[in-house]
Each structure stands twice: as C-alpha cells, then as structure tokens.
Image (cartoon, rainbow, N blue to C red; front, side):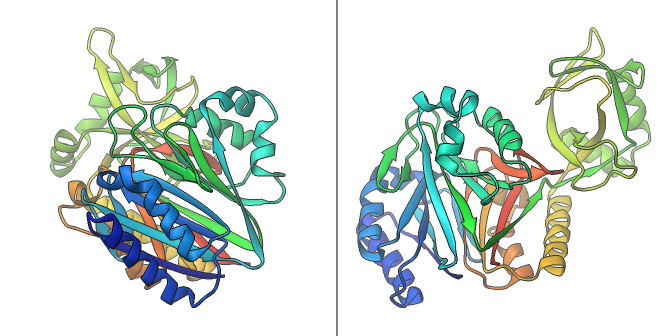
Length: 390
C-alpha cells in the first residue's frame, strides 16, 4: 500500500485545488490511487463539487468519496472552524474498494431487504466499512445494528457530517454523484488490514451496578434501590476532586457491552450521557435504551482522562500490530480546543505514537466505531481506523 495525505487552509477554491493537487501529485509520483478521500469544511461546502471534480480530474483516482464537516484534521494538525480541506489518497494494488451511496428511498430495502449486500459485497470478503452520513436523514443506529447482524466482526468506522444545522446542508460525494441526504461509504476488501481505536475519554468511578428496573431509556432502579439513591451513595465515596469534576463536566454512564467479563475496564463500556433526573420518582434518563439486568458503571470525562486513554490505546495498538500505513480519524466536534484548550491535540497525539503517517479526518457530529465487537455511534469520542497492507 502507498498512502499519501495533504491538508490546506484557504478560503479560495482555486488555491485549494492547486495546493492539494500539487502536494498529493508530488507524493504519488505518477501512481494512480484506487481511492481519494476528501473532507471539506463547511465554509467551502458550496464549492465541494467543483473542488472534487478538479482534484479527480488531475489525480484520476479510480474511486472517490467526499464529506463536509465543521473542522478537519491532517498529519499532526487540526484546522478548526476555518475553510480547509484534508485529503488521503490510497494506492492498494492488492486490495479493492467498493464505494456506495444510500439515498433516502433506499433505507427500507437496506434495513429490511437484501440491498445492503448488493451495495457492500459478500460479508466474508469485507475487511472494513467506512460510513459518512448526513446527521438528519440517515438512520445510522439501525444501519449499524443491521451491519452487526449481516457483517459480524467487520469493523465499521466513520462519522456523521458536522457544521450543519438543518437538513440539506451537508455535501456527500461518491464517485461524482453529489447528495445532500443519506449516507455514503466504502467497503474495503482484499489484502488490507483495518484495526480501530475508539477512545471515549472517560474513566469509571464507583463500582459496577445492575439495572433492576427500567423503561426505554429511563433507569428506575439500580441494585434494587431508586437510581438517584444509588447515585447519591456512589457520590459520597468520591474524592473532592472528582466531585468538582462531576459538577463541572457532568456524569456519564457506561453500559457494559459484555457483562460476562469478570473484570470490566476501558473498552468494556459504551459511554452515554445522563440526560435528566426525575426527582419525583428517583429515576434517571440516559442517551440510549437500557434493559433489565444490564450492568452499568458511572464515569467521569475530562481532558486529562481523554488524553491518557487515547495514548494508552494507541500504544497498545502499535505494540500489538505495529505502525499503520495510514490513519483515518473521526473526532467529536466537542473535542479539539473545546475540550483540551489547546490546538491539534488528537492529531498531534496520533503523530506522537505512530510517527508522521498519512492521516486525514474530520470533526464529526457523531463518531462511528466498534466497542466490544459491536459497532456504535458515539459522542465526545475519537474513532480511528488504522490501515495496513496484509
């Protein structure tokens, strides 16, 4: 595999085209890429089709996909809330890609019929799936559930487009077709290995508890007592520092993906927000459905925890599988300077762990990645896809 990437900040579409093309062309050295992936920030969204057409005309990739977003990332850098583009070109002679577009009228056939297999190919051949979606019109949760059933153990990664506040504003481009709704993506097949790192940036507090009574997304009882009572008891055991952090950043709930594990730790929980407290009943509502018997544990999130967890996960991945040849990064638009109070955090951390490896990514309105062998939409998370030849 030969992977190259480039990023540029400019509000001039012509300068963007010439700058990105020149950078990628020099690195490619005349080799035609199988896939060109571009992420374009919202101020340039109205020029996305023109920019894409020009880059495709110059670089001649076999396939291309483009998504607009609030902010983008490149090697060691994050360009937040400014006109910018980040691109990754992949030359994979022993692998293949299968781009797809799911329009609004396709969803019934995709979720209930056989359309998914027609779009993505046989499940035993797919090594990984990237999905980029409109946050308003794409039922991503249901799609991921379908993929877990039809494509078991296939990692799904990507994100929901950001920088928009109403339907129709996003630009999704797949092999020349421009869409403003639905989802696009790429199925990777052949001699390619894709590992994922999903850093939710939280650490557990208290001890695991079991849901003994609930409805929908409302937890009524934990361990046989009203949920709010269980929370109050847990809080009494916290340090003053953790109490202050909870008051300033909020309390999160981690639902154990596989409660059969005797010891639960980082990577075993799916983190969800605590939405509201119902004082009259002692119940709490969270940002996901729950079920009786489910194991949960409360979590805290802050910049130091987010940094430490992501660093630890990347160190483990490199130790286990080696340095990747390319990285795709989908980080929450609530991270970046909003969380870390300094620029380039996640991109710089990736570079510190894997070196100056080609990287492209964007700040998402929902990040997609697997936890415990199942694929989910996350918030406040950094989801990475690490690509290697096989």
